[in-house]
Amino acid sequence: MPPESRPIPRYVAEPPQDGLPYGRFAQMLSERFVAACRELDDEDSEIGEPGEIAWFPDRTYAGRTYIPAAATTSTGSEVFGYVSYRRAAGEGEPADYEAFADATVETAVANPDWTLDLSDHELELWRGPEGRRGTVTLVWGRALVPNGAIATAELGPTTTDGCPLVEERFTLISLDDYTGDLLEVRLYGGGGGELARESLYEGE
Image 1 (cartoon, rainbow, N blue to C red):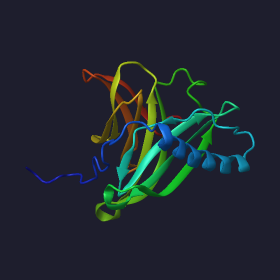
Image 2 (cartoon, rainbow, N blue to C red):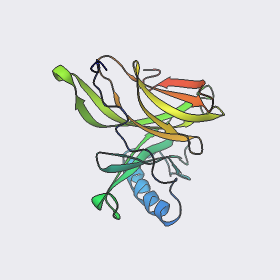
Image 3 (spheres, rainbow, N blue to C red):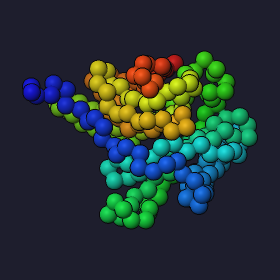
C-alpha cells in the first residue's frame, strides 16, 4: 500500500459509550450547564432562562468526555455548549468537570429551510507536516429531515468521523480549517443515500 498522501487525524474520538444522560446524572450535568448559561446571562440579559435541555451523544477525545447540550430559552434564543469530564484510569467516577455555554438567536425554529441544526466548539490546535495548522473541533447537531441514520464529518475529500443518530442527534470530533479545507457535515440514511449536507461556515 502506498504511503498516505495526506496524513491527517481521522476517527480520533471514541464512539459514543453510553446512552443519552438521564436521571441523577442528567440532573448533575444540567446544574453545571445552567450555571455556565447564567454566566452568559450576566453579560446579556436578553438571553433568558434555559428550558428543557437536549443532550447529545458522548464522545471522548484525549482522555476527556464531552456531552454537548442545547436548550431554548424563555426569550426564544438558544443556549448551546457542553459538559465535559475525565475518568480516573478510564473507568473510574467522572471528575474534573468543565462546562461551556454560548447563545444564539439563529434557531432552527426561525429557519425552517435548515436540514441540519449544527453547533461547534474548537478544542485544540493541530499541526501537520511543514507546520500546516488546523483545529480539532467538537461538532454536535440535530437532523431536521426524516430517516437519517448516521452523520459524518468531511474535510475536503476525506471522511474524518462518523456518529449514528440517537433521537435525531449526533456528535462529531474532527480536524477543521486545514490546507484550505473547511469542515462539512453530511447526513446519510440507512440505505447509504445522502439526505443533507451543511458546512460549518454556511452563511459566513
